[in-house]
Amino acid sequence: MKRPFGITLLAIVSGFFAILAAFAALRFLGIGIGPARIPGAYWYAFMYALLAWVYIWLAQMLLGMHPSAWMFLAIITVFNLIMNFMVLIGSGTWYDVNVAVILNGLVLIYIMLPGTKKAFGMEKPAGA
Image (cartoon, rainbow, N blue to C red; front, side, top):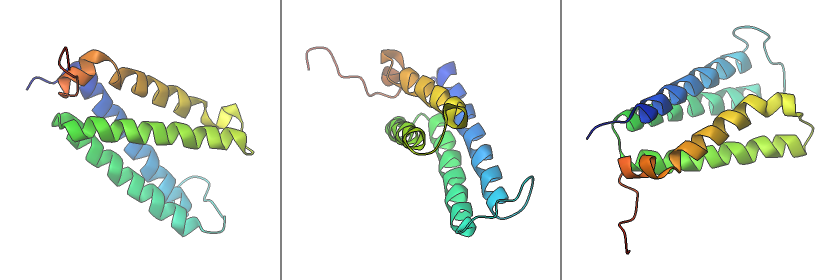
């Protein structure tokens, strides 16, 4: 099965998100720039490490063109958008989430295109 360039780009973006999550996990452990001294820092470190693992798994699945990767990417992208909007509703500002909203929005738009769905075998046949 031939992999379109856009799918490879999505895998690279997933790898980038994994690196960002790993840096966040290290920051909550007190390693790196600006250690976070907040209650529950170890819990946040664990959750970000888990998120980094999920993004690495997702990148591998995207490179393998597994149909479940398309579905999981759609779910995690919508979840990230919901969480970013929750930050905006709370005490956050647009500056806190602008890059995440833009990247997740672009990813969601791209994976919903008919060509991307067809590449993963998710497009319904005509007349069905």
